[in-house]
Image (cartoon, rainbow over all chains, first blue to last red):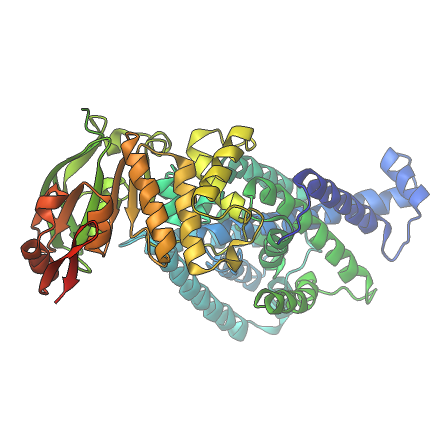
Length: 324
Length: 255
């Protein structure tokens, strides 16, 4: 028997958690802001609190929320696309392509926008390359997965090559980018916009995802146009991952863990799972980023390290529980 | 009688090998067809082609006088259903949810399960003897129970043409006979049933027509009594088969 929360209650709980994580992100830090000051700042009263909260912490908190939501949504889509609950947004090498683009920009001594552009172009190149290679011959999730995994390994080698060749000056920045870091999220608006568009593009097909999760044959027999849906999923998931990697580098485990956890709690109805993944992923990464900023302050930890440190034991626990 | 599903000059090929050539056949309402042949003679591929899930090498398949390719997939799924040979359930799901997937082609993506949908699903579960299993996890079912669940999903879909790929794999004797009887009753109500089987005796017992695939492009189709003879079956399976008298007619045994 499985016990499940009703869908509405789950979304309400997750929305509350998301709000709480955002408020905590605004309040916590080297300058502590009391709840009263926080409210005053948000209400528009000026003061030191207002500057810290609105100009430093709010963009970063919203950026973290956007990246977490993007990764979790993309992970949920990739898992259905590949018919594999262990798939994550990076499994097809999108993050590898983005990293190569960003590292090349950093290697050339560039910073800021060119690095972002490099990451995005790299992610797009990886997307087109994997799909182009996998689309030749017989199309199957296994073929797509293998193509992506091999390409990801290839990108990994190129990343190591770039690191080996890099002079000392840009090396630290390059390593920090690779570990996943949200301190450079300048404008979270773009991330939130892509997140909203991604949800709008996938919610209408959420019912079809429930069928595709049972295999292409079963989905086709029950009226899903499988080829069109797979292309749609691939493009949207890749766009979401590209946006996430561009904003925050590669941050592990959110895209794998969040949809997986939610499936155990709430079942596999994607009409509920997709919005729940966005809320849970956003809340989790916002909380993790706040912890990364404050745990060893003034030292800032790369948030990707933190999510992996939290994610590995949780995931292993789930895996052990699942093989009863 | 209006034919419900028609094969016209249909060739079925796998990796360039023509397994079935020039199939001309009408599957009419009220008929129950058995699809027989050795392993690898194209039974599954033919069923997928007839379901419109695989392109024909040449020729075409029509439902209600329109080629399958001209149908919207979702609309076609209201009339034409397939029980795949295997089912995959990589993600956690309950028995009732899985059965309700059969209603997907009949409603809009966001409408909740209606009382009528639930009633159909529960009735289908009762038919396959899975009443009381509604909230169980699919991962905890046995092989035979999963097979019955897949049949319940097809029954919940409620198509006019039912294509079943080895429906009784993993089923015990009682459930096999019970479901055969149900499928036969569906045909008697005007549905069309076509199922691949490995047991000529089950075919003899439940079907009125048979389609034999020889795997070299040749096929034979017709009334079950004229198709299932010692001579035909021995040639079909490449192994001597004799008929002995049984309680309901001849029983085929491998010599």
